[in-house]
Image (cartoon, rainbow, N blue to C red; front, side):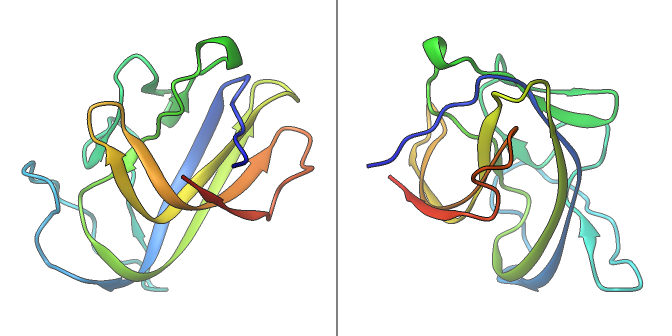
Length: 144
């Protein structure tokens, strides 16, 4: 099993998704109103203000200057994730921008995954990997 840990902050500048929604209702009990699709059919799944529609450990994830900011160091790693819960997607295209605070940053985006430990937000499934040195960008690997 391959495990990678973030050693610096990752900033997700924008997250938009285009796809087929499996349900009109949010997956979680909180009601989140997502914007209408843009001209290309994409909707923003991050509002730029707070983590509405997302769940994760509060001490790891926050919104700073309009972006999602996650902080984890290798020595304190809990292998935890921020999980989008506002809608259940069945088929989608995700576009995002990211930035690391240092070249040592390493993270990824889980997709087609399931929550294995809801208390710690540990997930299993596929991960699109990326890192500060761009050595793993574009790599898809299983995370379990």
